[in-house]
Image 1: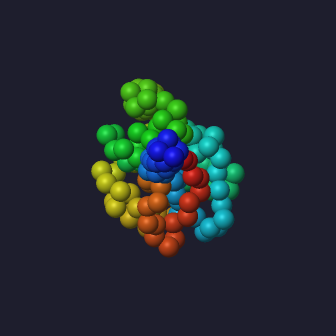
Image 2: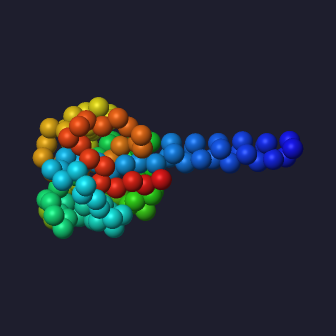
Image 3: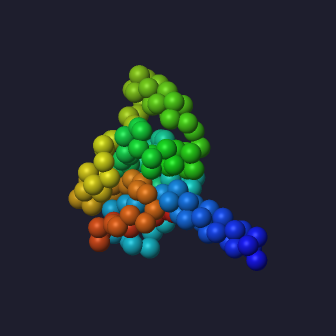
Length: 139
């Protein structure tokens, strides 16, 4: 019986840790049922900012933020150093600029909430303003 109890506790704690490691991609869009694929999210944050229905204004949390590290690992699939190098090349060539960065979650959510088409990521289970919709969930 002790063996099963221990197994159950380990399983439960791993599910809780997984929930804490998730991120939501959220946007200020008029269609609350709108959703994106992982590939579309990656493209929005690493290139054009456009999707099948909207022109987005991607925003990000500053380097060192836990949600940013999770987003980069699970969605962009690149380490921070590679992402920084990519954006340095894009800025130098004049082709693109990186997403605007915010130092904290409240500032990011205020910007998304007040800017049509703004899109960003937040830790899963973040309380969202009424006009901000979840467009992708990563766990």
